[in-house]
Length: 192
Image 1 (cartoon, helix red, strand yellow):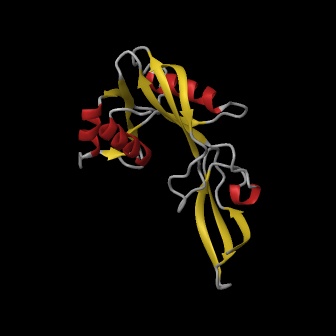
Image 2: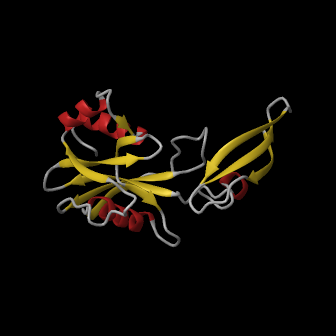
Image 3: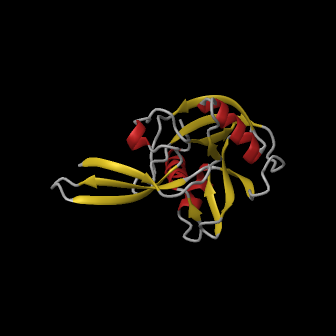
C-alpha cells in the first residue's frame, strides 16, 4: 500500500472529508473518502500522539457507581448511552480536557485520574479520529447547567447489575467504547 496524495473535500471547523488516493498491494490505483478532525490529516502529518478528544469513564466515589450519559445524537435521531466526552482545545492537556468536559456535560467534579489510554481509534474505516479514555474518580451532584444549547444530556448512575441490563437492552443505542467498559464492569463489578 502506498499513499499518493490526499485532497480536502470540505471546509468546516470541527470535521472535514478528505479523499486519499493510494496504490493497493498489487499497484492498482484506488481512493478512499474519510473524515478527519485535523486540518491536515494524520496520514500526512504522522501526528498520532495527541488525541482529538477524550472520553471520560467517571467513577462516582460517594455513590460507588459509574456515571454514563444519555445524550441526543442528531445522526442517530435518538438518544445514545455513552460517557462524557469532548474535543481537546489547543494547548489543553488530556486531564484538563477531561476535567472541563466532565463538568460541562454532567456538573460533576473530577477528583483523581486513575489511568489514561494512549490514543485509540474506534471507526478507522471512516475517520482518523482518536480519543484517549480517561478513567477518573469524581464527586458532586449531576447538573446540566453547563450544557450548551445544542446539547441534550442527562447523567445516569450505573451499578454493575444495571450495566449488565443496559448492554443487553436491544432498544438502546450504545457507544462502542461505553459498551465495552459496561460489559467489563458488569462481569467484574469494578473498573480497575
